Image (tube, rainbow, N blue to C red):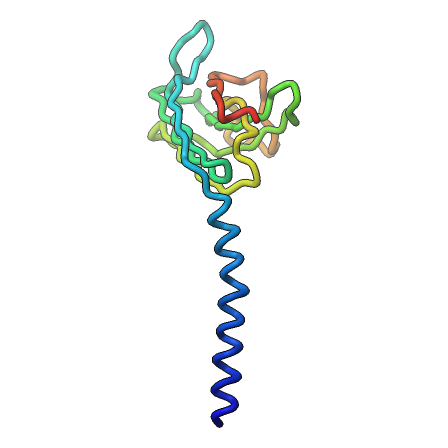
Length: 149
C-alpha cells in the first residue's frame, strides 16, 4: 500500500515536470501586444469604416465597424491578406460583417504578423466560393509594422 502511494506521488511529480515545459514554451511565445487603428478606405478616398487590430505575434484580434450596408442580396466579408512582395498572397476570411455593421475576429496563429492588409469585399449572400471576389472590393486598410513580417 505504502509503495503504491509513493509510486503515485512520483508519477504525479514526473507528470508535473513534463507539463511544466509545455507551460514554459507557451509563455515564451507571449510577446507584448501591439495595436493599431486605421480607416477602411473605399473608392475615391471615402471612409468606409474603421479597423482596430492587435497582435502579440501569435494571436490576432480584429474589430471592424462601418455604417454602410451591402446592396440587397449581398454581404460584406472581411479578409486578412498577405500581399507583400515576399508574401503568399493568401486571403483569410474573417467572416461576414454583421447587419449591425460590426465584425470581431480572434484567432491564435503560427505567425500573425505576416498579414499586410485588411480588405472588405461585397459578395452575393448565397455565394458558394470560399475565395474573395476582388472585383467587388469596397474598402481596404494597410497594416503597419509589426505586420508584414
